[in-house]
Length: 114
Length: 115
Image (cartoon, rainbow over the protein chains, first blue to last red):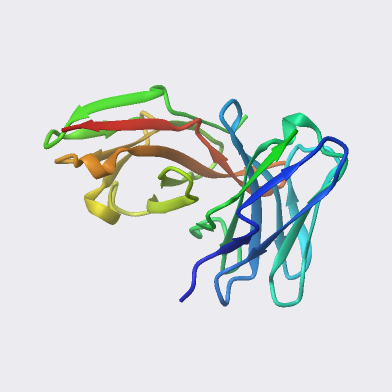
């Protein structure tokens, strides 16, 4: 079974631009979560989608948004980029997002904002 | 507040020696605990988890972890370290926060195994 895939793997943007990141979960997985990883803050939860609905949300500004499609693929959008948005963005999937389920992570998209 | 603490930023161990990476947690209700490993330029890989049952949990690559309810700890262990175990290790707890379940990750511990 193929793992979680994320595209693109690397991105360079400038302040003020917007960016869209894509995540394809493991086949059969319907829950997709997004995380931001930075050296200073560690892993921070952004949001979770299940069956095309945002089910959980972390403490990030409204510039960070996401969506999920009927095939469970998910996209994350960041508008009006700031230097502090430079990070590794990780996507993780699980079957239904139940509390005991393991999340499986993709390789991440490394975003650099100049 | 729910939290996970990994008190050591880095752990150094000689190859062949046992290793321990520490994790303590604070949650309300039953904890669901996980360990993940991250290699450079890679995502997180699942190692093991504690849901219920035996306090000693065995996972991938020879790792194990012991759940200690009284000490609210979930330390990761391996009897004999390999150089290839050198990586960043994250402890996580699944906890109910603001009415929903979220993963809360520790800040990570960098394990360096010396040849």
